[in-house]
Length: 225
Image 1 (spheres, helix red, strand yellow):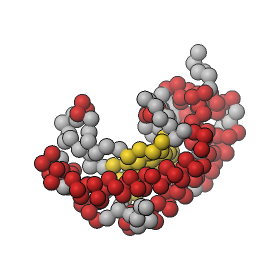
Image 2 (tube, one colour):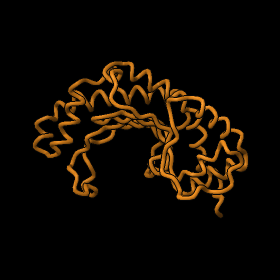
Image 3 (cartoon, one colour):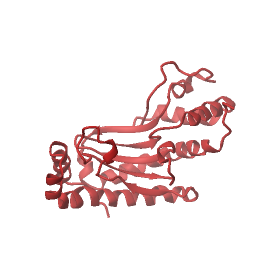
């Protein structure tokens, strides 16, 4: 069971950031396994059990990211990531285009939320068309989002908002080409105990109705045709 991260977790992440080479990683691999990968895997398994228990019919899977960068995409960076994340998502080749739940830990901060890594243009078109067709559900979700302080709507925006919003409350969604509902903050003491697991569960529970709404967008007709 997840019991929290440790000071060694943070030390390792800073270490790999400034010593991003195989020699240093191999010398510190056991620290990585014991203090970053294993607690992250335990946290990921717990979050998967919690979320999939609420979404039994969605065929979800849990993942822990690899610390190794894709060799084809190094772009002058070292071969290792200095951060790690877990996700709960539907399987598939284009996982980046489907909504997922995640938690990410970096040397200086942590974040969690639910959304798209890279939503397809058609997905955003379907979202706008659904809001225009029947804004009731999205108005309810957006007002609930606006009343709380844990998550914010984040993501890349169009240079000009798309037209057609049926209500000013929904206007922020018409600016997004991609989005997530995210919470981010500097490293906090709760990371070093089970407190972070309980906070994530509470946050993910809030995000469940948003996931249920967004994950069904794939089944809508393409409004551009």
